[in-house]
Image (cartoon, rainbow, N blue to C red; front, side, top):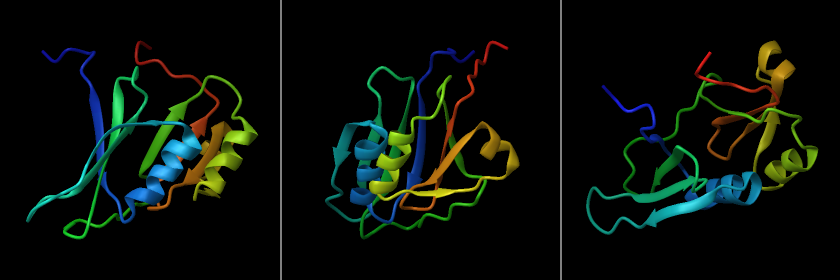
Length: 134
């Protein structure tokens, strides 16, 4: 049985780690949890972002030797349930940090704001709440 408190890592490639760092750290307010520079063949630059107290983090992989390039679709969503209104200053900060506000369709447009990050992946800031407990 897997412990329900197990950590979750969301990993994906990035074209520009500096740009996504500006978006997620400067815009959203995540912290840099770890950073590494690939130094040899087959190694990649690595950036881990999150909140130290959270049970999840983003792992972004980049660099010149990156085999996989970002290929986001409109359904590749990272949804943050804020349990309250989406602060307009947060949206503005994300846009100034390289994000672009987009429509995610009637459902998500009704329940939040969607911002596309510099790699084209979508971040939904939902004013709803969520619980896995039901």
